[in-house]
Length: 291
Image 1: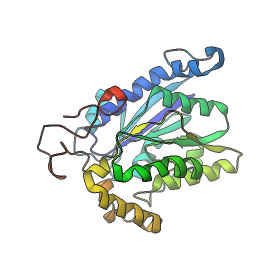
Image 2: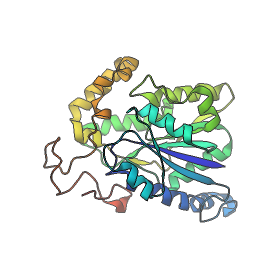
Image 3: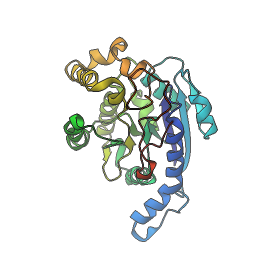
Image 4: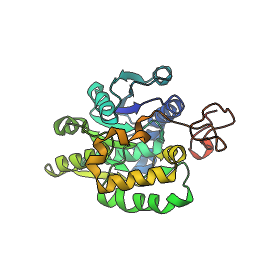
């Protein structure tokens, strides 16, 4: 089996290296994790799954920073998508992919060997068309604790919603149902999950939601844009989902190019300070310093 890992990236110079390094380590270590989880530890070796080939594709979505250069330096294949849209970037990566399975990971998300092993175990069962995962966040602000709890405990597992930062799918299924809807500038991951679920249902296949080893993703949008702006956007999307998803002018949180702030003391739009950033200690699997 060949796995193609696709990372859409727009101005991700501050995050892409950590994302790629974690993925490379995960590919090396997932075989050992699967062996420990398997009866007798047979069928896998410590260096990686014995039958697994892989490729990592970074889709440079018209970045104005050094995203593409950093990705190449870290061994990724870089594909260029000139139209700045998340759905197009993911589709461009899938078009270039040669794997039997596609895994979409966001640049601000860290995947461990345990997460990858859990995904590969689900694939090995032969009963899934694809899936997603519950999520671990690099930190949880007090106001958002309830909403993130509901998302992880109810929305994702029971509604089978696939969060865009970690989604996997059979490549043949992806091509048959058309991938990500390019009429949408946001919410394309939820619609993708619905299309995947419908395709699988017709063939007796399910959508898996991984729960044991969640990938770690950031809450940088809350840090960068504030609780009020993000909350209003979510409310608007829940009430007018497709209208909101099609209106790029109202989706600055995805497309205005802001990706980081230097430290908690600095104003949201100021980028000149070198005193720190929004990362936390890597010793817990979270984001390293990006100063």
